[in-house]
Image 1 (cartoon, rainbow, N blue to C red):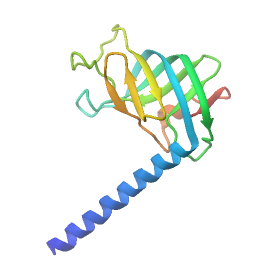
Image 2: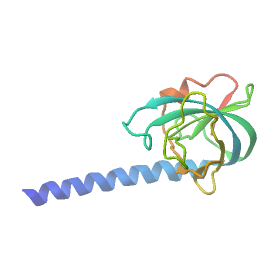
Image 3: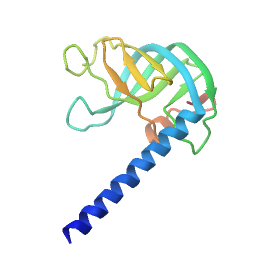
Length: 152
């Protein structure tokens, strides 16, 4: 009985890993860009009980957004939303000060951010480097969409 349960758990994990791989492969096949800008504010979306995994909606004032390829359309995985009128990007990410290992408080100057889809990482000016959170759907990001936004 124990071996049967273990085999079933392994099968579920492999299926889950294959699903995650499919999402990332689909995303990277349809999107290529370079983005940099200043994080203006962060709003908590999901509290995991530790600053290292809490997920925030980051609002970024864009300095550079070089889109080389964007075939993201409804129903495909995406990373963020770009508003062309306000020149802002919205993404979901953990954020904490890499130098102090503490979360940023209200009133703190938030770091500059750089994202290149080719290296699949989010780079913060304080030295923090994190992976990208690619989603198939997000109520928080969808709330930022309007007639002047694109998913990327």
